[in-house]
Length: 222
Image 1 (cartoon, rainbow, N blue to C red):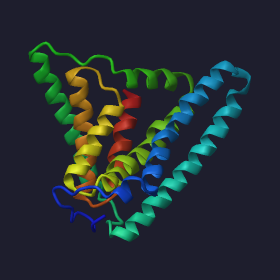
Image 2: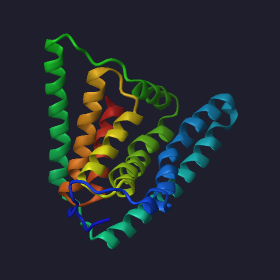
Image 3: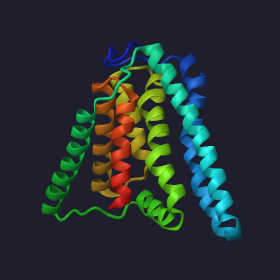
Image 4: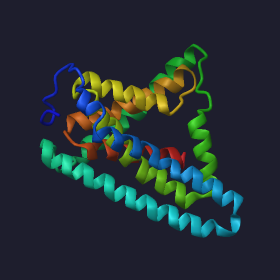
């Protein structure tokens, strides 16, 4: 990968990178949050062991989190990413996403297009209601770190570090969240655009993670 923010518009991916270690890391981190829905299912089937399942799941999640941060730190040193996150720009990006979503919702409303219930959000809301501590850890902490590492760092590098690869991986990020309807795709698109802008403008994965954490916390609260 090029040094931070020195990416070309397009670059052909390297076969070596496509099938290299970063691909397996991306797959592992992408699948890791699925541990928590499985833990919720086990807790439902075996309610007597719910506390134990929660504790074990959180401990595994912490291990995954530490490993993800280790990889991020290593890549920061290797590619010269910024080591500090500027808080005000992070808040600005977050508020910009909120304002953009409100405006788009209003404009679509003029054409009688409303936001349908999003399958991904509905399932998460259900699990949060039943296992609040476990799911808060997954949604507000683990998922932002692992998803930003995958979609704003590893995948763009695998696809040939360029602006095209960043946009492509962000589109994949939107797609895996199974948005419903044009407003669903638009809302997730706004979210992905905000995360990507934070990542590129501050030359830091942590900036994208910070915006992602804020967004997910607000989603839980509202």
